[in-house]
Picture 1: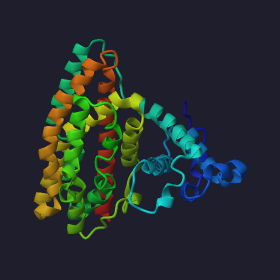
Picture 2: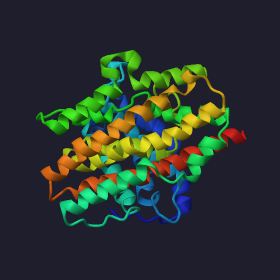
Picture 3: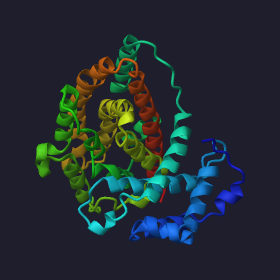
Picture 4: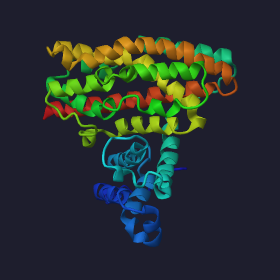
Length: 356
């Protein structure tokens, strides 16, 4: 799908916040598919905004920030229906809606084409080259050169900025590893068993007090922040939402399994270096261990998870799918780009919070 902006005024004239409010009403409308089929005016204002965002919001030269945020917020609201939030069961009335599926497909199709255009996907001819490439990527990201954002978090971020960091990170941190659960079912084998082992550790081996998200909640409590999931949804930049939505896109489609494994491999390998900056920031700010414990836990466990992902997941899958193994590298490289973009957006938001 080719996306070209026609007029920045046309895009800017759309009230995306109002369109999102209308979409939320549609989400909770009983018999949504039947009602929008009988009365198309129910969806018209929202559809106008969606079409405008898709037709003009992703132009490389003149991206409209509100359009990008609107698309990712709508997509997130649909994707979250795949998880159970222990809330009102009526919130899931439309989880099987054909209308919602159509919206999801339209956004993902356009967005994936746009996002993929930002990375250089080079063909890799042999599994020997795939193995070599993966090991090279992993070596780079286990001990990367410090980024500008990483150095800022480590050396300059204030307590006000740290609170903003926690607020944004909580959107994913409080439901951590949930997407991994979507790929665990199916035929048992060594790869599946290792993924299940990693998932089990992320979830504290079934003990709530040891679940990683519990450690994140404790950090929030130490700052007297709201520990409810999605409490800080409105602070999340579109780049962070795009990161979460991309994970849903990969894990919900079995054809994308190898790309998902590449994405997960990058996460597990790169987290120790990234979280080290947050941990050191906490120590510099004189925070209590409980206010930064989550980072240290991840650094320790993800170093192990990274090794498991390489040796017991990614490389065995290269042998199992030799003709498609390059998709693991594709998934890795795309996730590296998406994560870097999200980190830059978080740093901008932290600076904004600090500047008052």
